[in-house]
Image (cartoon, rainbow, N blue to C red):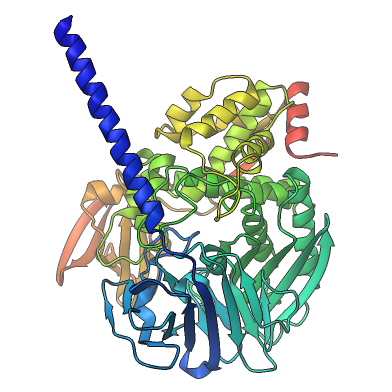
Length: 624
């Protein structure tokens, strides 16, 4: 008893000392916090053909001996390390009188400037090469400047919270569109802090067209930039955007912005379309032209990105804001932040009348097909996919990976989890509640009733908070669902969930389909090159490998006919010789072909739905 007492007393003393030391350290850190700077950013757009934008940062009231200027390694919304500093050149620093200040590069992102003799003013200038039109990068050419802040604007370490001003210098006929802009002629903007600065993309262009509408007391701008001379009428795009805005605002609490800007780009030469969410704007890139049939794609992306105004920009996972721009910010919840948002982009395309129920159900069937064709679904959970997004969310790859067989998309699986959760909630509550209620509950708890910080209102949620919200709304326990389908890799229960609303999934073999080899290929001048081999397939069991060059099927060359066309000549189970090349050596392999794989997925009504199922389905599909 005596020894135990003395041990406890010693622990209490050590704990007290630890607390005092911790408080002392925190007080010292607070005391050492430097006073705020007067920060002014100047963006010059002078020579479009060079693709070089010039940035000048003025820091006044400098009391520190040195300042570190840092360019982010990544852009929020795109979970990949890009190291934007690769495109920085001609960095220089001087004081207010123009005298050169010494500086040194500390690491790949950081320029360390000696401000000890700067007299309270430090001016930094640098150029950024900008020739990528995506939601992550910037582009400057003769038609426009599309500026994504994280790729262009450095921050002063320790001063991200300080207010900044931004001046845009561009040719007189160029207009400026952004979430900051009161008019197209405005060139000077006052910004609360650095985080808001880089979360507000700029479109500066002599060609941009803008339409405006008011919805729910909020002003919306739809900006349109296209490389196609035939894209002259975007009234359907603007009208579709307005329908989406009406639908999503009717579901979620009134947003806390006064204006919102949709910036659309239509470009024929981009490799992929893109969309990026921001606090009160979105930046959308569509491959192709509006006149060439890209309207539906543009509107689906708009529905996704606008829903992010609630889900991810305000209601957000714990790791996503405030951000550490120098490294990965990990979260297991992107399946909810991004995937559920994808589900709701489909929901609101239906609710606002841009789609019919058949369009909606077909898009869900296509999502199911995509997941079923992903071997990684058996290996990677939705949470793991979210956490490991930094490996494959458009991340540059310098080594060969097995992502095609070992990963799953948190967008894709998250959208399907959103579908199944929505149906399961409706089923458990006899249609009284839905996933809509979960989103509203979480938004109220983690955003609307949380005190503001410099970054804004709200605090991040943890993965357990999603489960707790599901339980609270449904009045039941979703732990088993989470363990099996969100944290686990069990096959998703399409039959049960769709059956609850009188629907069923149908997977059919396409007419004229031949037997399956189990590979994906790309055309080569001498044949077809294998880009992936599905585990357990005929090709896998027969010994084919990624990067094999298929030259012939049963001595019939693949130069004048595709692999798919050649395979149609054989029945399932046929043993067929293939000629291929591997590392410059020619090989012959005989493979027993698999049966044709179902590739046509549809969702349709069951033969005899019950009245209860029909009622649930009508409530879900918003049938009036």
